[in-house]
Amino acid sequence: MKVRSDAHPALHDLEPSVDAFLAELLRGLSRRPKSIAAKFFYDEIGCQLFDEICSLDEYYLTRTEMGILREKVGEICDLFGPECRLVEFGSGSNDKTRIMLDHLHAPAAYVPVDIARENLLRCSARLAHIYPELCITPVCADFTTAFTLPDTPRPVRRTVAFFPGSTIGNLEPAEAENFLRRISLLCGAGGGLLIGVDLKKDRLTLERAYNDARGVTARFNLNLLTRINRSFGAGIRRDKFQHHAFYNEEFGRIEMRLVSLVEQTIQLNGTTFYFQEGEHIVTEHSYKYSVDEFAKLAGRSGWAVKSLWTDDAKLFSVHYLAVE
Image (cartoon, rainbow, N blue to C red; front, side):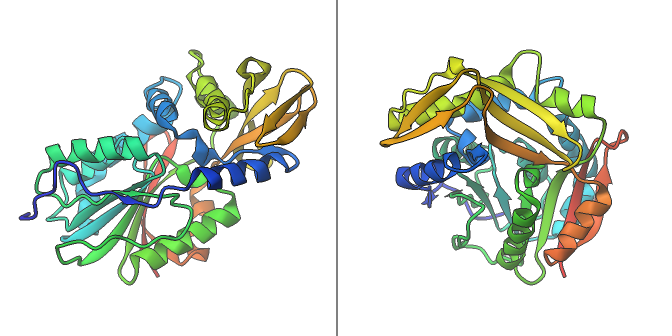
């Protein structure tokens, strides 16, 4: 590689405004049941807590996916081919990406896309020091909405998207289908997608992953309320809500909630929201798929499964998809 990245890669800033955040909150809290989109977990504290979650014994997803990537990285990078532009959705700490960056063949560029602006800047700068000849062009955006990719100084032979962590499970199935379709258009002809998908398994393993003994996931969930208070002066009492997560077998998903412990009201930008004791806010759905279920979802979205890898215990899967 001959292109040298800047120590602080130039940010393409499409971060949603505070007004957009407020508008989504007002809509979500007006629904039945009340809801807050999972993308709003990731302020600075939320990113730190999520990194802590990923290291927990109960949270098998991260270490299992990284194990698959390390074992199969040669095959994966051969599928990507030379001079690819790697676009990562929800780039976070970039730990999984580094496994591939160490083995890619003359990559044209790396485009991390994340909604958490400060974390994105910090992690992109760190990568620029580790890979000084790699073109890194971070994009701060809500990746569930349409956006265009920044130009790169080197020729791009093909664009490959990377969507790890089973974050696809946080989207409702119809939303996931639409999202995958947008990625296929973004990658274009000859494009590819490497995606992590959590597999269906026993209830105990699933529920332990979202109810860890140290309570980190509970703090992560409750931090949503702290973020709302900080952003809008809402004065919500965290101690009046409780984290609750369980596996809904009928829908094949973990449901994460904030449950009101008392009858109460909260004020947000002049709007009053009433809570009954036991009423909840949905903060995350995390869908789990069988291999066949995900292949069908991908097919409906314009993708074909070209390669599939799982761990020995069949806890997690990594799929390589190509545009049909």
